[in-house]
Length: 471
Ligand code: URP
Ligand code: ZN
Ligand code: ZN
Ligand code: ZN
Image 1 (cartoon, rainbow, N blue to C red):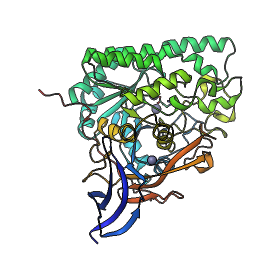
Image 2 (image 1 turned 120 degrees about the vertical axis):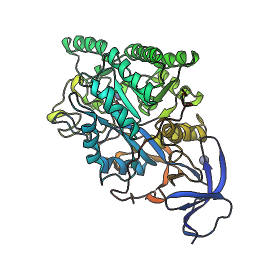
Image 3 (image 1 turned 90 degrees about the vertical axis):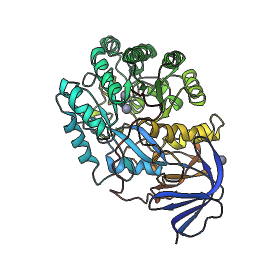
């Protein structure tokens, strides 16, 4: 046979087009798009269903070591299995540098964690927490050349945060070497001050997490991040934007011609501060993440930003901690004060279907916009395009055939290793019917069919969201 696989009667969706075609695959790549393609060793009849590029989840946390007893529930095995079953075929988790650690040591550690375990292709963002002269002058430039072309920096969390001077230093490296800097924007001192007051008043239930991190702490830090990037004259990408006041800062930056990109996540569309609890119940710990979910009005602002181009990337920020047991939301088996609840929620498997259901099916965004946000743009932002994030001849055959059907979501259907989903009981109208990773079926609509270790490490090229600076 001429091809390994032909997907017939696809309603193909790209970031710009929708067209009916057959898709021929050979050696893991798309080799032909056309009508009436014949000669596949294997055939799949898409029967007019939408076929999109596989998801690129550019913000997820897998197997990051934590101070005991806390432990992330997903490693590269369960995390990428869950991704595949939810239509995501490329993940970009983080390699986190601890203070005092070299970047090389951090990268080596995470490669070991991923090696032989991943079911889908993966790259790494660095988390730079200790920008020593050796990191700034030697390690970072060398690693950027070797295919680690993006890094995250934090303005909050004691163990990770950089001060403004350090942020300027790191941004200057991003500028000089063309890397993409991702920024977690929350004002650490405001959070600390508020948290202490809440604690002193005995307000320690999960719901007070949202009061310790109000919108203004995100607004201020977002503004400051924009100013720092303007000073250095370098693009940045603000991650997990939660609501209106941060969006306003980003709109302001764009209106002034600055290359400020933004990411948002499902939790800011589908959860609100009330999910952290309306009383002192500990259930709310399930939805503790930073920034915290806001309210209905802010959710609408996020939807508007997805539809109108304010947001470039839609990621999960999957940060997997189980609820019961002693390793997750109840460290040591105890219900702890909000400051000690591990931050983050699971969502690597639900990201795509939530946005297809409530975005595309509900008429809030076009199918093309869906592809742009979940796949094409993240691939461009982090130097993986056009091999990833595109449905075109020559691209990897990472594809999703969509099933449009109504069902009620429950954690039992999911393949992560977390014991809950924040979206339990949600009515969805679509789910990936088939996921293909480099031409192999990894999810057939009922079962995970991938292979441990089949996922390969991807060296990232330079970001291609904006033209390269010359000279
Ligand atoms: O609460 C969150 N988002 N946890 C994950 C770490 C991060 O800041 O993205
Ligand atoms: Zn449809
Ligand atoms: Zn963050
Ligand atoms: Zn994160």
